[in-house]
Length: 624
Image (cartoon, rainbow, N blue to C red; front, top):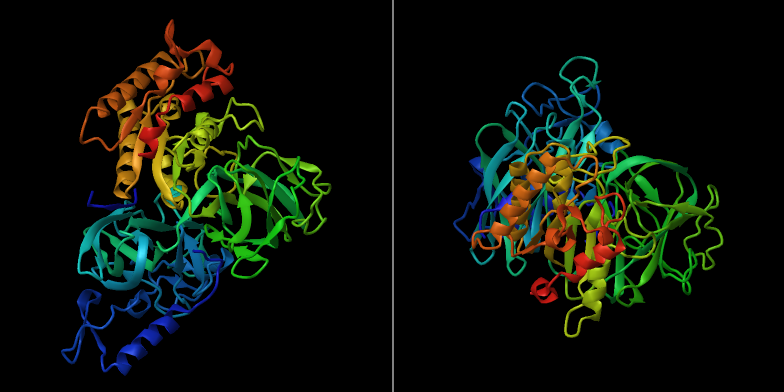
């Protein structure tokens, strides 16, 4: 579920004070001889007949209280039953009053909540000022009153040239909605019953929704949706700026939140290989699925020599000018850009010092590359130029989800499961099919060296969450692609195209073929709404693997038939259908992998099969 358009920065946690900003805007208008008369639905008119003043920011319109201190509700009532979000739980997550949190690539100013102070609005057509050029508008919201179901409404983005676009926003229930789709999950709520917070009502969810905007036009304001059944509670609105052309050159998706270490006062040195080249570089860190913030004491970037040893001196990274940064639960941070020449397909080391104890972390679990750790208590080794302190080995990627370069021809995201993630390929050989695709683009005469971002997760499904979306869990198969696409595809910078190669895990877990195909088509529609070119791949054979039964094979054939038919359908959400099934299957037994391509488990292709997939791609079709 999420946001859809009906027509076919960085932030590390500063506090700016939304109410102070609102007061400044009001002061400007008063100085100009204008005041606002707020009408029903949050509309406004100048009182003297002059031209309309700027549309007010959300902070001016806040009129409901949904956040309370534990044991002191002070009129807070989010759900009409006297229950509310806990201010203490929000603060424990690093979501302090007025703080800026980056969600889905957009800086969002949290409400300046305090005892008895309004902190949100119930969406009902209010006009919210949001000037600037944005490629997406991000709304922080939750829903109540729909019997535990989602709430949907239609809003509008209005541009300064007078044009506008409609969008539909769907937000899940604050208590019963899927945690895997939430930006933040809190462990409990303040109950209407006496005695303060209660866990009996279950955990509470806040959702971030990304609405695509036209980056070529300047946004004037957003009209919040009017809804039917239920209430949509909006806490913040922000925009992802379209004024800086960053391109992703490496990425991985968070697959779960697991126990680690514990790590304390030690340094992680993470090994990655870039795809597109550049000389202005920044990294993206995320604290996805977490319940509390994590402190990054220092960070650095270096070209890799051998093992954990850099090639030359590591370059220190900063975050809004500081060496350290607090990464809030569920949030992202981008480092300040640094000058370092990264040719295409460079081996890079990203070092992160963790000064405080870390017992659990968001990770990409099936890292096919070996990374390194220093000993606990060894301190900040981010600038080490020898590699000697890094005596431990690490086979996950924690916190780091992206490396970006300024400029570049754009990127393609490979959204998939374990075959895309590289299961069955040789460790440290960069033999995944997206790796080979990146090498082909780099070597192709007259072709742009696009970034190729691997968003594969081993075990992942299109339609169902494997990791539940909250808490420490052994499941690291990620939330569903429908839930994670806004974060792992649409929020990456410079994305021009997406390739979806998934569905076999859904079938192997009993999901009907019709549901799988519909999920793939829904992913295609969402990507097209954001101006992306979309390619889908047919499902590979897996006969001989224990869970690839005859029923699964029938479902696979049904899904593939529907995808192949989409290639001839002008109304299809896909720009192309890549027949990976035809590439990998054994002509003698088409329900099985060709033996030369089989890694040995009958499900995952080995290096030769993965290379065959990448070499089957029409590069000229891909780059458009």
